[in-house]
Amino acid sequence: MNKVRVLIANNQTAVKIPSGIRLLIRRCCHAVLIYENFSQDAEISVSFVDNEEIRSLNAQYRERDMVTDVLSFPLGENGKYDVNQETGACMLGDVVISMERAVEQAEEFGHSLQREIGFLTVHSVFHLLGYDHELSGLAALQMREREEQVLSELGLSRTA
Image (cartoon, rainbow, N blue to C red; front, side, top):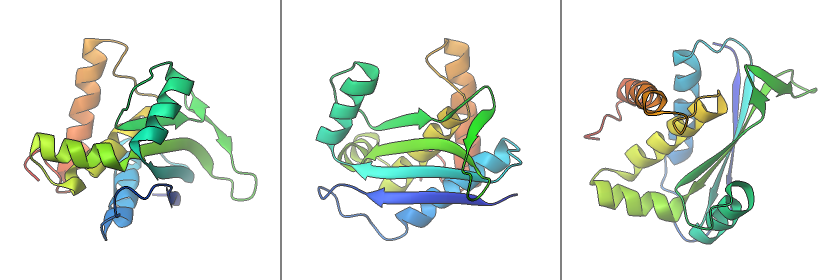
């Protein structure tokens, strides 16, 4: 596995970030890239925001004026990525997670916040690599199977 740099920013104050979440996000990013046999150095940016910020981003970039749990902003297409000229790493893109929504969903689904953040991160990194569950039911099923495989390998199965 080559180098993977995960840049994490907390841009919200609504939810205190539990200890271990930053490490969990890094582990999730690494696990997806290993699972997908991604063989280049990579950079991924992850930001924590509140519901209002993610609603605003969702309206601006997806024309959906509503709160969502996570947004992915890929910087590549068809396996070709922008390259950081200083490091030579492929810049895969940005992941934006609503911490408020993550807490709500963890409670709603009856699992830990770690499982929810892990799922949202894994889901988004697959998007950064070009997967799109909105293309078809089959694409959604294939993406979900990959996500659950990675989460299981991380000890974050549906019961976690």
